[in-house]
Length: 155
Image (cartoon, rainbow, N blue to C red; front, side):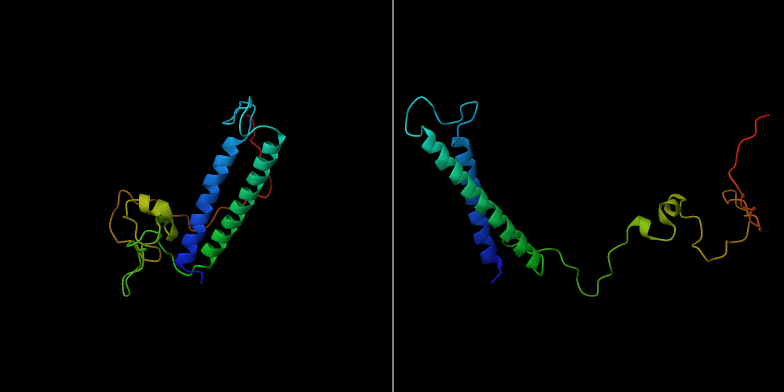
């Protein structure tokens, strides 16, 4: 019974709690005066402060409870759902090609795509002929690794 009707009921209760809590907080006396006049009238005295404080605490507890229920309902939903009637989440059609991978997921990465696409894929030989943009060939033997820290020499 964790369907859309239960979710709608919990959301409606949650919104009513939010509006009530906003109203009760605005009724409380603050240092600036708030919406309640302190001279005389219907809501004055120490008893009003206790009632408003307790009401705020109860509304806050209800707010946290409905927030917890909404998060649990969202965690247990099996498919994405829309609260707007008539709109459905986008789904991939069967037999459709998979979505395009991001640019940085390939072996060439971003630097390979910035090269203009002229470089052949890894593992394929380069085409014969002179090329002005081709990098110089790599040396056949690697340079020996340094044995200690390199200190610049002054002359």
